[in-house]
Image 1: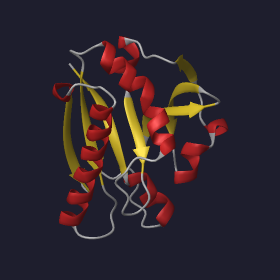
Image 2: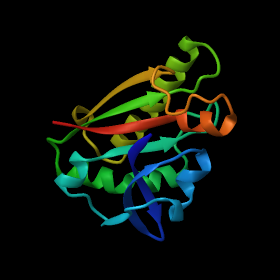
Image 3: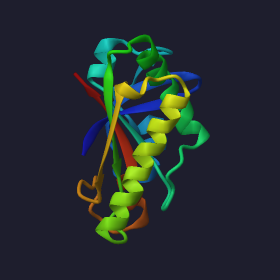
Length: 158
């Protein structure tokens, strides 16, 4: 599956379109083609093309320090553009019940929303939802593939 991915590397925010076959692929910059720096701030054109993915360990709902760093340029953009809206979509993996995955997926989306608001983004700019385990990236039942499914996506809204 191909998607746009934001990466924080050597102090620069990068955006790439890539196809990841495992959790480790997202961390291996040399495997990603067409990487381009988008600097410390995002333009409206960058945001319009943006789908940000943040991955989680099993059962985790809280952003780690790297995920928070990755999110800073988007937060700064949203603070400078208070009419811009985003949708945060939480996802679960294929392990466990559908209802448990919906709960954890929503908790992930809510945690990101709370963090962004703490950082100064206006609550009216953010909507959240979850897909539970309904839209997996990977269908394989191995732990690496399921790591791709435990994620949040941040989508640009008109």
